[in-house]
Length: 326
Image (cartoon, rainbow, N blue to C red; front, side):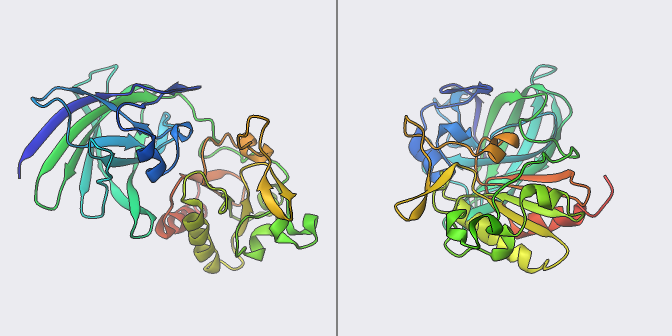
């Protein structure tokens, strides 16, 4: 086994309202192939080499819209310098985390990552469940082991915030009314872009589900107008889990964007500039990207949050955790 590349990376490029994110040399084509454009805070990062070569052989792409003090689902993918995706089930990635403000060379904690298919057998990314002990400037070293035993290594530095825009784990879920089947006389095509909607997902509003005294799954997903190409697979996984919980869990699907029926079909209500507009419930929950799935316990407390892709095992584990004391 040989270690071929060691490089230090730092964010640069397009700026977001709440932090610095990287445009670098990878380009928006890579971001579109992964999850979304720069607005969803995928972070292809520009290299500052510390090894002999000018550019590392792997480029990390951070796919988490926000990283904050406490528990995080750390999402990322890998590309080569040309932007071709390298993430796959047979490429293992180990992570080392550094508090760059305190000591940029000391490993604070480490974690293995797991590969997740974003679109089955087509493309995916990695996830790791981690916990940042404090906010500030952090760094991650990515050690990617390829099937031939080659190890490619890069390090990325980025900002970790004091708190998230979405409801923290353990906090009360925001109370807000959302459209249900009753509001449209059972015509789900007026409130859902899912071509095969599960009627059960539209029986309750978010408010109803919070007040129902049992766990709930809230899916902010737009299958027909998804900006990340992962909404369809996400809602199908939620449906599969729902089938295993016919009475003990409530499920709610809401479109994350403002919608209206136009020319006989459900369409996004665009701004004067032609942009998609967040729905009130999306704003209330502080979501910056979609799809997004939130798991609540019977007391209406947020117990898990899943940005982007999700696996059936992750959602089942979260529902089990939602039945346990905090």
